[in-house]
Image (cartoon, rainbow, N blue to C red; front, top):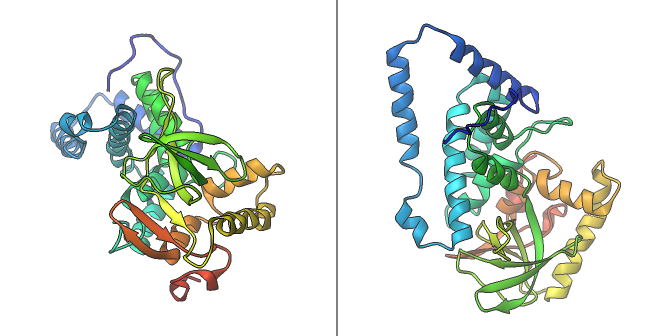
Length: 312
């Protein structure tokens, strides 16, 4: 990453995991004795990770906003792979590895947990307990700040980190754009859906949306393959009501006093570490190449198609 020329005050991290990582990195940078072989191995590892990044040709075929987020996410994944090798990150890497083993994220038909959903969950939502709530993304971003990396990367990483899955009502389509309204917050958003699924008015979606990055872009991007909620025996109004009732029942289980803050906390962190992973896994009903269909409510296990597979 390109470094800023401006000298900035040394950044020490926003939480204990980031601070330990930065302290370890600072110690290594101060060490005057280096082992050539270790540097060579490190360079080889970085080169291998870089090969996983989408090519310029692939990016040129995408919508500009989607392409920018795709590139940023791939760069972030490379960084997370590298810093994740430090022992100080075990509180995050261990539950991530456990979730991989439990849910086998690959997308239907192998697993209803899509790669686009799971990668974002692991980077932005899986967090430590307590007030700081560090994630793999916050730690990697703090490391970028410590090494004085290009601010353009940092700004995008921060916007991605502030995102969460959300539940939206489809309000109709205009050209390539889809209009969505988030339940509880009632925020209306104009989006593109790169998976190619446009849906229909009235549908209820579970999806992660990344915002516009520039003033001249007036739309957002549905970054994950959308999950459509509800079953064939329910009309759209009933599905919407079921989810509003779900939040009404469960908002008391958060520490937030305001309904919007409670909704945001539930969607970001769930009511347990694998709350949304478990829901998607058990609620799976069907799929098409560009969309996954879910049924049932997270807190009513008997309503879930695969409830017999529920973990204790």
